[in-house]
Length: 216
Image 1 (tube, rainbow, N blue to C red):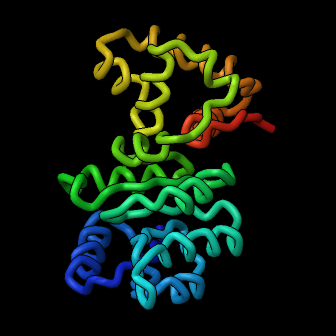
Image 2: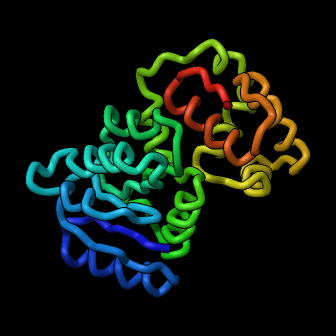
Image 3: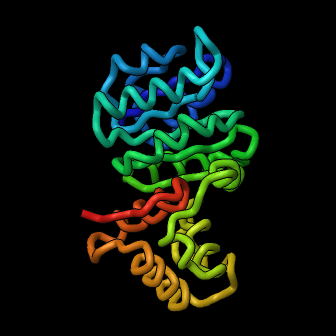
């Protein structure tokens, strides 16, 4: 699996290169700036938010441009900051895997590698703090208002990338109960029967963006 890494801090960039290579990834490129990211066509991009020359949100802007250039390009944002506007835009197109992790909340290699693989496979990997910030001051759509408190808890854990078993363990309910809650979520968000992995992503995107979700 070919990875392009966009990170301006030398020591962190080199550490991530060695970590990814040790887990079987191929580093197609390791770049320091947003524009350099657009020169490559990887299987997944791992991108810092703040890159030279602006050190503001150039990484996220480059990720958005890369997804326009390569529709569905899986992107994992790894940053110390949550840029709500561009993060919402990155999540809103509904195509390809997407993740957003905070650097100071990645506690071990397995957590990070699992997130990269999940995003590369078309899933989501969202830090709970990122979810909380993205939910601030957003308006809820009518379908989301129909979710019960427990269904919202299940959907939030889905957004973190938890499996059904992990959700059951966190909420102390059976796998069957989790499956029932997820089926209810799909119904209330008007996600027609399709590939369940795709419907999970669409449900998470609807949750984060407060917009109705429709499966094709």
